[in-house]
Length: 523
Image 1: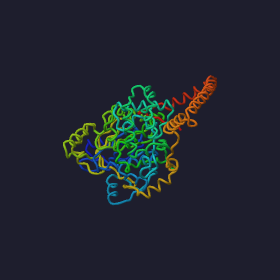
Image 2 (image 1 turned 180 degrees about the vertical axis):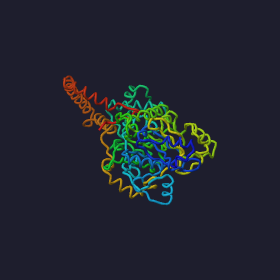
Image 3 (image 1 turned 90 degrees about the vertical axis):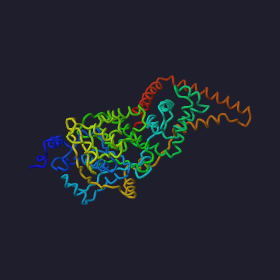
Image 4 (image 1 turned 180 degrees about the horizontal axis):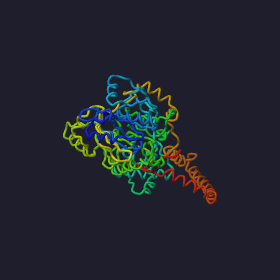
């Protein structure tokens, strides 16, 4: 008689809800009445991982190992993975784990054939701060909505920043790095730019001044490294290795832990950029990418309604492009209800109920689960490390029964790779040469600076006297008239008009902004 057949009827019904026929990830084994039943595996179908998910639980309950466990199996089945590594302990996924009594005991409990294995991984770092290939974004592709979140602007200032981006787009002033945007705002608030400012509806001098001060302070805090070129191409996250396994992209964030709004918003930019690029695929046999968004509550804290609406829309629509998003946080209440309602797969680790706020969060968490024979309030406070309450979507898209689960042990190293070893891996990557060295090409800052210098030179006295100055103005006027005549001839030609229509279409496509106002020049 099998282990599952000895279970009570209620437990057998739970176990039958996870008896999938197609490709699936093995999470662990069913817990019932204090015992682990290895013959009743708890699994998640591979095709439903683009229906998004939530991994939650108090600090120290095993969330990080759960990410590692799921990521290993996704990679093994050819699915690329993105991991935000806030604490710096996920780099071990690239190295085989080490057997010990604890690992062997867990493997025996859940009937796991544990074999040490490392998985193909790339390591990234925001702006190159820390161990990893530098990840940068241009200001124009980051967009005004995400940048407003980072700068902590209010709704009026966010809308005004959007007008400034629109002005720069229409004037051909490329916003590559922070000094480009600062130069544009400084110009608009200067005496020379007042007329231009008047033409931007709804943008006041006072608001532009606030934005300029925010940018200056932001840059003074050392934030320049995160914006610029070469801009990271999010298509790098969709790669597989030569042996067909999905590459695990680990964004190392320990060096920027003290900049939570920056790194959480950068993670959202990565998602928005993927959404902007990827074609529709509908329901597929497996996802194109599974994206783990750690410390998710940081993204939603103090977010404007427009920002939350954009997140909700991105999460809802990116599913059809083959991307699954798992938010990782402490309790489901950290995630807005409109987003939470789209997370079909749940792995809930233990919660603590030491304070009245903890107890309130516990009750709220229980209400987010389907009806269950478990006493979930008692269960969630009594789970051990590496145990969780699970409910996922079945192959038919229906929620599975709630299952208390003892999770399997990861097969890769459960700890970080040392800094020197990590640096060698980073520098040996074929992507390192592509992104390591920052590039500062001509953009808005250089163009505005050159224009200001040219204007100053034109106004300077020629030959030191007033007559020289007047003569210089006369020559400049005559030259301008000749150039104007030439321009009129070219513009009136049929070839130019055809070219203008073509270029106009191309420019319009390049500066069209997607969700969050993001945009980039396509490679």
